View 1 (cartoon, rainbow, N blue to C red):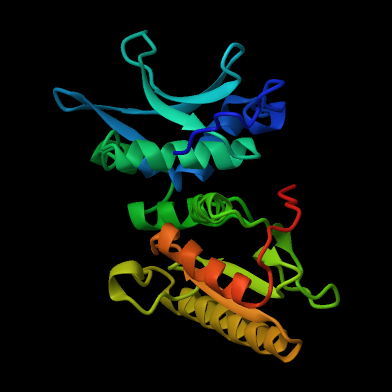
View 2: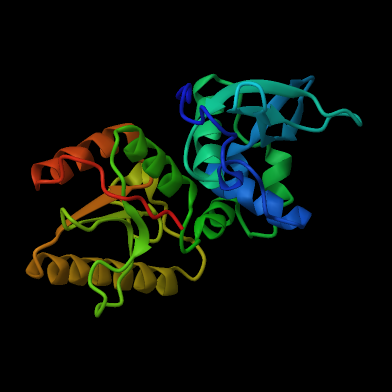
Length: 266
């Protein structure tokens, strides 16, 4: 978490930095899942064997012009909350991700209880997590990486084609430095570390072929971008995003981008 002291000195933060747009309960839950990195990463321990699925609430205080994040949940008709800290990112999605990361670092979260996993529509907890994480953009790992890169003073474009004529979208694009960053899910891209890749036991041949196709596409994407003068960086979802961000910053600045470029997170 960072302090935004002086950031919004003369006026309150823009609504896009804190105000939610999801109108349905399902939409709000999906937003929290994306920011946390999955539903199973949103649980707190209530004691006596009870757990609750929590959410992050962002509030703006007029006098201080700061955005404060609270971890909130429901318990026997009440809505307790714990102050997590202040956030100062450009978008609500990034502020939610930063708040979830802070809640995790403070030890406020616990693994999802078995009962929550058993109530899932997926056949197994592992499949449930894989399918929940299968989004085109704004996944939990992406948001955490963007937050870490932003904190280092770099600006970037989100979900853009490095080469307009090539139908391949990078998660972070540094146009001036010609650096394209891809955040790869451990399952869908076949992480080489056994601890992070668990092959499906059902329809195994189908999923094996699907992942192999993804890997071939990744290799082709890297080759085509490198031939066009781009540097390709791939970050696994299990990596420490602060470390990954530092690696990205070194490469970007090493290619002549010493100053931040205009951010376009929309």
